Amino acid sequence: MKRATQIMARLPKVGITKSFSFSHPRIAAAIVVVMSFIGMFLGSGMTNSYGIFEEEYENIYSNKGSGKSSISSAIAIGSVHVSVNYLFTTIAGAVCERLGMGLTTFLGGLLLGTGHFAAGFCTKVWQLVLTQGVLAGAGVGTVFIVVSTIPTSWFSKNQGFLIGVVHSGSGVGGLVLAPLTRFLINKYSLAGALKILGIFLLSGITLVSLGMATKPDELVDQEEEENIDRIPSADSASDCKVSTLAKKRMSVRSFGVRDVHSTSGVLRSQEFWYLNIAVMLAEAAFYVVLFFLPVYAIGIGLTSEQGALIAGVANGATIIGRITIGYIADLSGNINMFFITHLLVTLSCFFLWFPAKSFMIMMVFACVFGLFAGSLTPMVPLCSVTLFGQNGLANNVGLLGIGMVLTTSAAPVIARVFYEKLGQNGAGYGTVALFCGGVYFVATLSILALRICVSRKPWVKI
Image 1 (tube, one colour):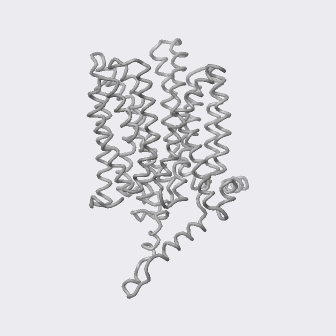
Image 2: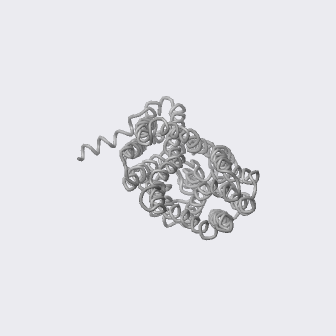
Image 3: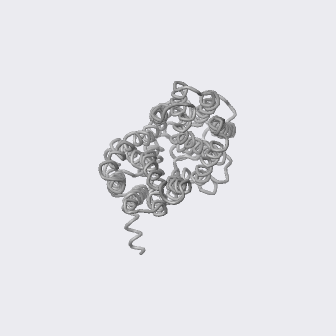
């Protein structure tokens, strides 16, 4: 057993990236970004395409049992998938520290592919909950935590832009994999499509795992020495007292604005909890908006085709937002941009979505919402780097997934209650918009508290 563990620990070091790390570090860095994009495309893109399966499951299982309860049980598949996804970002973050990025990615691909392939043999809802819900959800969360954090270890500049490019893969994946899934279902049946997708996802993530490696310590040390050498030579005894820690902070890769070196230290910092509250609330509201946009559109008198188009535009806008907002964050500061984007999202929910009664206003809201709210996922690792540095990034981001398991499960249920209880006279639709706006407002206040906690100077780049 010990021998097997030693062999597994070596596996992440054998890959495409490792071959170029020392001789061609720029090529290695480019490979990491491309492979991370593909991993996000396959993993999170598959989750964004789940609506196709949801439609099929409701059509199949609504005719069994007692109607409404059967539909609710089918909805449980997607709910479990999302919840387990966030739960495993926490677990996988700790696994990365022990097994390495490459092997962790491969294990995620194994779970993701196996979950879909096994679902192709399932005939009951509880079986689908275990396969496509638990196994596939665990695979997505495991792959996500690696591909969303590893690019920052290779770059000290333009981190926001590069992370935005990587995270745009989830939006591109949703746009591509949704019609692909529909094509496979129509041609090979639901069971056949699941089996094909399972093999496709396992093969793709296995390839991605070969390119997952953090920057070698030797190259990191070399860069830090170069940064330290740029410090002007001291002319006085007082100048010579510049601490080693201060010098090392010339490299944002190793240290953040807080001198924290352990998981317990991160959990004890108030900055982490401000960030945690903001992330778990904003992520929950984000999914509620995406889930309810088509229903909301039909509720105000639009057609189902218009509702689907509005939801598609919102998803498409996240692609542009994640890249452009990431680039702007490099110039203005990650936490600063995190606050600005969610302030704008909050205002859009109250002043665009709530009063919307026409197709045009809904389209404007979809564009604004997708552009700014979609920046959440790339902002999380970037803000974590700003606060706590590159060291232990996967584990730090994974810790944020614990709260998201609860909020992403509870928020859609609460929104559904508002919708069903107050929707008979049309008021329910507006209540959902106000609920999402209120959640985003609290999240924005938490980001503001985080910003003030780090620095009270409004124009400082943080």
